[in-house]
Length: 629
Image (cartoon, rainbow, N blue to C red):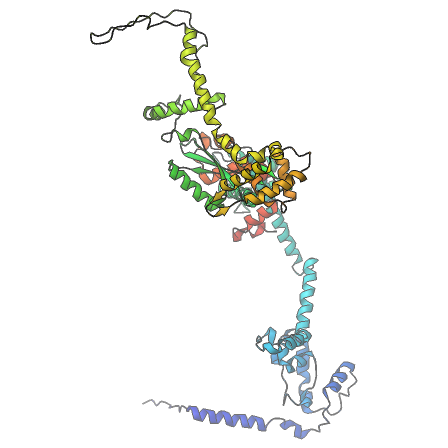
């Protein structure tokens, strides 16, 4: 039968008694070795320090057994001095630490060990804020702090001069980074160049050294013929030394978006600096039958030295709701996303045709696709009266000869007399009056029934056309015409200023103060140089003295913000047709806007900073750290 040993478990009180007994025994044995040796008089700390520094102490006198025992320990501590310099907590001293007789060797480590507060900032932290000033001074004088500062400064110098232990590895890393940044630089430049010229990027293939791989890869192959950077890059691709070559269509899309976003940021900064702006909108269908609305902003650019009247293209917006409310909501949303306030709009310009025909878009008759002809006919079938009114409106108001239809009719009057036709009358009709049916010559008939009516309609149209200009004249005419401003008397000038204040009032918000504007204009009339004749020159003059004429400066900027036509929006449609052709009809809206703004605002694109673009591209993915500078 096996037996088990039963172990007695001590209680808490018994453990405390044992611990206390061991502590008393340890204290009784402290300095017990000193009874076997002769102790000399305990020297002062300054004497020990002087003895250590001069090396003149007599090491053979009054040597006790403890000193002999610690000789080997000193050798070990000397070998590991670099390691133990930062860990003064493990500094071992036999006996009472408060007894200077036990300080065999007073060095910097011992000093730091004796002064506990000197290294708390680097180890345990610190919370004695009343004495923080004194503690910081002691920490700065501590041995540990001096060593750390010395090593840090030495490392900084070696890093600056490339004298680190991994110098060769760092050189290879820098060389690799330079290669990738050079590749990215050429890629960005090529993307910007193709976008500015409205040239397609992709082909049927997306591999290098293959036919029909598109203009982007084709131009990269041309670069490789004379550029060592691209040549080396292609060599790595061919040898499969790299996995990501950064030439795919996804990278192209990302770079197009990034470049377009940067140009848009530059434009928005100018608009926000100008504060007041006008909105110009126009719509047209693209090749994929999507309704595209062009958004153009007109403002007075005051970011440069001389103010300039600018019209900036911002975006194509795909319109799904063609009603007035839908267009307004679309505009409101895009202005909110762009960070522009709708309260700062001071003018508007919209399409003419869309005000009349807001249903199905009129489309050209296809010559090859017979099934598409029904779509062309449908627009006329269901909207004939509206199209007729729109054509009359264009004929009356447009100066562009392309808006008039070519009917292939010779402008020659027929000399052949037209036979008079008499209609059979019923018994209940009134009898025919003699001389009622008069046959007119063709030219006379044209003069009475066409020419005179056209002239009458033209006169009416001129009045309608200039109604808006007359309203503009009543509001801003005294500012636009410099001669009228100089000759205006005080009463008339005051009335014009108050009228302008009322026109620019919205609720409780006033853009200008009419009374202050009157006083400023009176001063301006006497101070304006005689060589200034144009409004743009007045703007340039006011910018230099903006603080002297604040209301006048605001009034002239708002006046020049008002649009006079939607031509800039119509010009953007020509770029739309070049960029989104029938071969590129599946292009996304994001890519379309990026290419469009780079093409239309190409002068702004020339000001892009390649270094910032490369850093931004590198910061979008952790894998792209090799592109960072």
